[in-house]
Image (cartoon, rainbow, N blue to C red; front, side, top):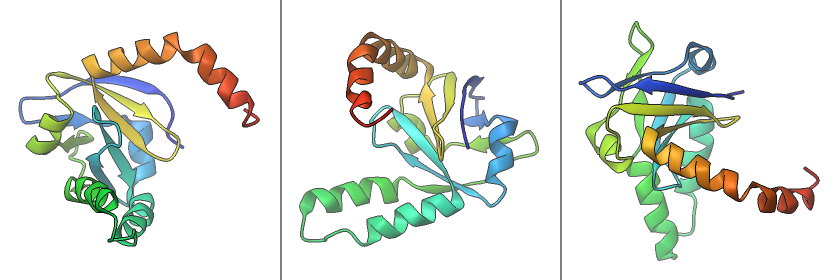
Amino acid sequence: MFIGEYAHNLDDKGRLAIPAKFRMLLDNGAVITRSLDNKCLTLYPRKKWEEIAEKLANIPIGQSSARAFARIILSGATDVEFDKQGRVNLPTYLLKFAKFEKKAIVTGQYDKIEIWSDDAWNEYAESAEISSDKVAEGLAALGL
């Protein structure tokens, strides 16, 4: 499983190092795409991505919002290859989408990895910490 938070710098070519402990779980390949949140990217192990892509391919085409959602996620997807230093090359359109500058935060999210710009992550984390009491109360109803 992917867990933890890591800060890394993007190089001038848009390459980002993925933590070694995460790379060990991605030996069958990976795909990166836009996240459901407008401020980050999601990197999926190949097998998990295939499950998601199949579901997206089978959503009702009669619903315009479903078609739009599938277009955004599928058109944003690209295969990831690691170089010898464990870096991935992030395409310009994904860098622009997530508003990356120099620093990135790589977070483990159990079965996937999220990649945030430093500013967006800090803003999100601060907001989440402020509302954590209310979130905890809601999760208690789910048995967590």
